[in-house]
Image (cartoon, rainbow, N blue to C red; front, side, top):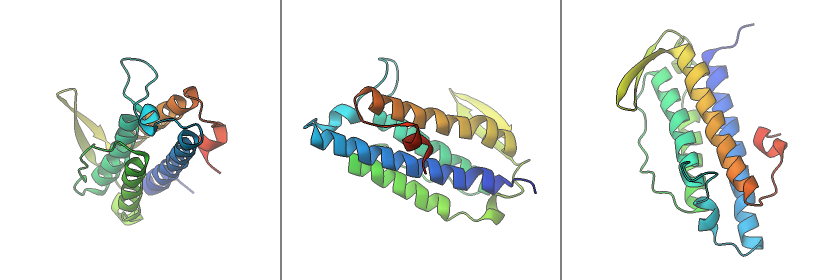
Length: 167
């Protein structure tokens, strides 16, 4: 049995966003227990030239909602990128998961050859659907969720590999 475009996208996206939500819950609990202003964690970054935690979450959700919409041939939802608290970031993740769950397998399956054009650093870049999913969107999701995990782990939040991978 072959793996469909839907199976390789929506369930994977939902799982990693759910794991990210759990990681953020642990971060909020940690901040409360240690009497740390949550904004310290939300604005933390691994290096001066990297985005902070909040932006990592925003990009991760943008990547998956954009990928799902483009593969389904529907309009990409637009979010404001104003989240500055753990509840707001959780809301963004929940909104994205709801959007992903609204897409049916029939909308995504068969999109392997669909042309997808993105503007990256001011230039149009065109992919076919399957390489877009496997070589661009999914690695970007993993990158930004990994960086979010690493930012929080670096700042003392007790996280382990299974928090990243999920149950």
